[in-house]
Length: 156
Image (cartoon, rainbow, N blue to C red; front, side, top):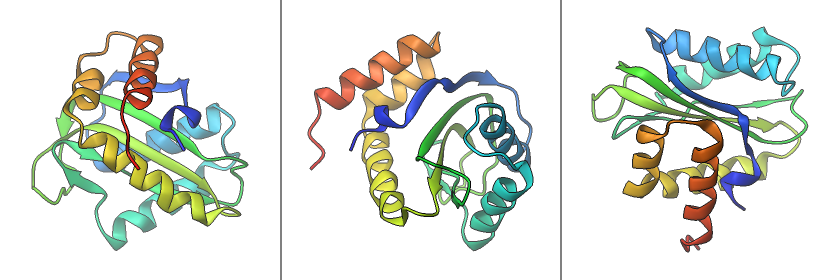
């Protein structure tokens, strides 16, 4: 499994100005509706909110992993957002977040949820991956860089 299989150019957003965690979750739900990943904003948004109530998905090092399952999603999707300025995300290390990697998982395929979370987590441990996101000047180029990183790195 590779992130590149679930991350598409139209799901990469660079230098997005959002003010809060709530704004980020609304943005994710809105993008998923616009890009045909789900039909109902409210259902997806509520799923993201419920996950955050369980425990913040701000994992540290400036990274947030909002994720939820959806009965409407036919396939898993990764949404990558680089924020224009870091925001409080109630992260485990109390540092602000500037990279959001949101995962939308089909309710019908819960096994992929854990595998995709693990894959994204491993990628985020690579300095090159985080640097590529933070320095990217375009979605297509960033997607190519991520593809190369995944091809040249063993995670298993």
